Length: 186
Length: 387
Image (cartoon, rainbow over all chains, first blue to last red; front, side, top):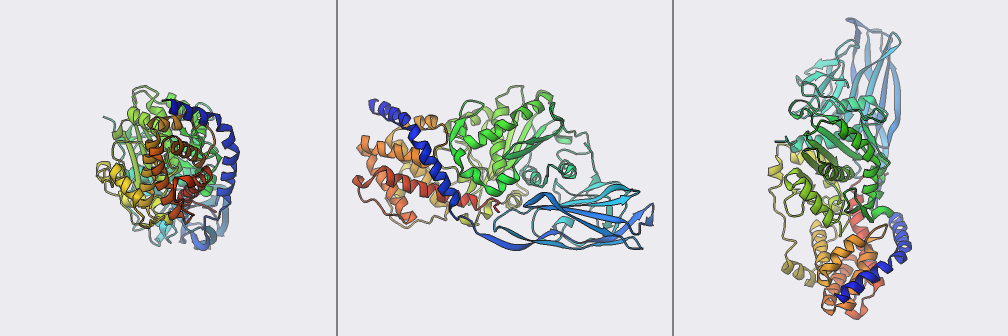
């Protein structure tokens, strides 16, 4: 018992002496080159090609903006602008980025697409990518016969029995999953 | 009886919270479309009394709070993740806040996690006060988010109000000492602690002793994995989602782990001079079991004193080195175990091996333990986002 008492007392008395060495250990640990970084090309947003309608008619020469965010650039992201042609068609290209990340970094990205109707912005598409795979943000495939209408009901689309909504959209396409429901607003 | 989230839903929520950006209302809306919130209905989001927002903000972590619908009608969901900065730097594993402090419930826990949790506490109290009594609270998170979820679940379970509290963590690091883990286990009850981890995920292995996980004496959801420890691939939330798909928590908790607690097995491991693989999760499990074994040999009383006295920003190495040396000097029967342990680690780390008890001094022990700790944290940091 005396041994234990001496042990505990001597430890308690020596506490101040440790704090300085602790700081040095931390500095040493932080300076060691633990990680390799690699520069690779990442798919930030998959292509989206379709037609923009309004009250059943093509919306020609209409501004479409795509705001993308990704790992390491979540706050500001990047904003792109496109215009529909005379037939209301749009073609948002594949967007990739050279990123320098640790090879094990978890990669996430989102894209939000907005159209301007009577000077009012309306969201027509929002989706997230949880991997670097192409088409991860469109349900795993290129969407066919995509039609977007700012007046359409915004729906949340679910895939493969997952509880997560992978996209929020006012667009409809051929082969669209039946598992979707109107977006609930809070 | 409180309804429990299946692993598939808990893991998808733990992933989806990473997609939320605080400046994007759309991302919050997308998250809240998850079926547990919006099963054809009446889900709503709680507004905090202060700030009027549902997002819980702290320097190191982020959380979202919402009320369930459908089968989870009225349940409170708290989903956490590390902040972007903390996720990318992963310095919460090795920074000066790796020491211990006291939790809100009065027990020794990780200093850094405690500070993060405390910075959210006022917001959490506000949400809790808005929730009807008797509702279930589900605390969810991956990695650092899992650590915060663990602290939140512990705190909620001790607030009374007749609420069932359930914890779901994936690849979470350790948050407290054995006394904290025991307390959490007692108030939450083991059946409400759903801690999932891959065998080769390095993050749940840190910080090293005296940190440990709850539940102590019941099974966690340990998931066999073949991804190399050093790759950190087993830490990916996407892999957790894939591996728990279609399984229940009972299925996942059914796996039995190797007998790392058998004293005879530990003694054999210490005496063995076979080469060890620092990249193997098996090495780390044995290493830690051996560390606790050696400390116990010195003094069971010192084991508990060590946990309660280590307050502040000290390194693991300093504390254990002091204890080992005192133990080797004071109790000769413990000296042989200290020597075997330090010698084995020296060989594994490629350092000069002490050959006799006379060669043991604080500097040598400390150097070996620092290298061991750095290697453990290196493995864990490789699993985290880093730029």
